[in-house]
Length: 150
Image (spheres, rainbow, N blue to C red):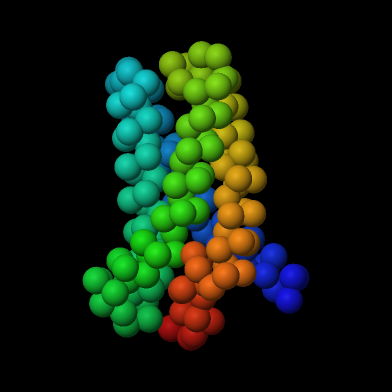
């Protein structure tokens, strides 16, 4: 059971990390390119991370002939806690690294802090996802759809 729980938790965390990473990186790149201040930079990154995260989940669920509304409800139930913990962790990390939030696109500091923040986000979200899944919540609510054929 623990191996199966760990495997499911790893899959769920990587799934959430994919959407969060796309949105977070895109948001930070846009923010750095146009020189946004700290708060708008974080806001656009979080909005895009949640948007891509929910979008990827909904896309997968809609392949199983679920309606948009049902897919949205399931994506919110499956991903919200995981993505929120990731977004909190990765943004807190970037803010904690001196100068990272204002680093330019051409700097190693920008890319290092952004990529490492995603590792931190994974480390925070994995135990949360494991705990949620073990209680039938989080990604457990969509688990049945991942094992059906398209």
